[in-house]
Image 1: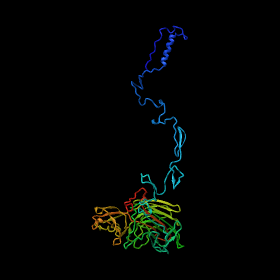
Image 2 (image 1 turned 90 degrees about the horizontal axis):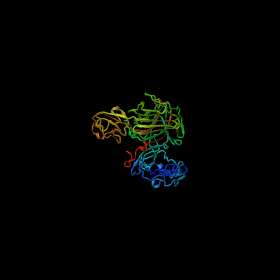
Image 3 (image 1 turned 180 degrees about the vertical axis):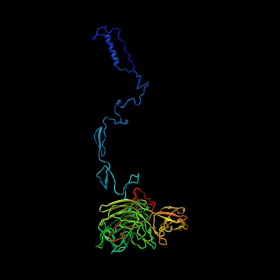
Image 4 (image 1 turned 135 degrees about the horizontal axis):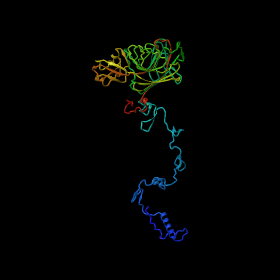
Length: 520
């Protein structure tokens, strides 16, 4: 602030003249003028402000919010009033006064199921078997039966393959069965004196196939899906390429009984027991030999077993065991107890208890097996399926790989399943590369084989090794072990099989409408 102009003091001395205070009136008047000048602000120009001089212009930061008074208008981003208030709307209630107001009300969206409001209106969680979010990023929730469909009419959809049998067809009479099944043709092959029949069941086990062998070694039967073809040299024509084509699931239900339900009466068993039993339920990769005899132990198998046989190398099971095995199959059946990949379930077989085996494959050569009993027993394990490797000698016929069912590397009289899904690996020179195919029908020799069309009429320039999985088919097998002595009735209740990429996960693939079966 600029200095103010104050008049000089009077010429008289302070005491020159009377006053109430003893000071002359002139001096008193002068002092009052000085006091007034000091207490009265002057409108003189400011020489500097905020450290700036001259024509000072306001700048950002000159004042803080506490130095500013007033109410912001709506245009300035304010409310335009010192007492703003929220306004209630549809389904919205406002309680209290500013600045302590509470917003509440009913949800604008009502969560319902089949037209009825859900009791919890805060969370929507669509869940259940076959319900998933997707395809990813679509914002859609898909409801499925666990399969990936290509057609919205599921009953006619060719995107999946399915088989199911409840064995409720009671047309087969007598005590000797050869074929049975509701919708599929099952073949029962017996060894020894065997009583077999298709019987009524108690719901939910409506229909059963039963068989009971005598006490002799190896007596019993096996039930296979398909009339497995045989020829004089033992080659077969059936089998599914399952191990290299995952995304499938198979279910088997069975039990042991100490008696045989036979046409309304019970066939008595003189020596019931499970101490001399060889049971295999699951996928079989064997070729039935010309004798058509029930085999006590498969060479190639994926499923659950209960095998008490002690032939060297001894198996001697006391519980159910999961197993994946691929042993070489000779021309004449000889039991081979060499075990494959196994997992002990810890479940002891019990007469009268229903058991359910589920085999699921979601990756090539890998299976997840689950065994569940009505008595509360449960076991689960993952196993790998072994593959076969064959050696092909130099100079072998190029059109037929000396029929892959009998190759020099496995011995001149070794048989393996002749239907395969794909060649997994070929180790050799250029002559062995390219497409390999399975013959559509048996050759004139009665055998199925693999061949390399690009090599027809040539001979191989060098030896090679070929690796592949066995073709497999479902089987229920129960016979006495190599010692015999006991009798047990084996009962088959149910079988189902389904192949579809959805088995490996509902987001694992997308149906392609340009393909006849939607998947390659």
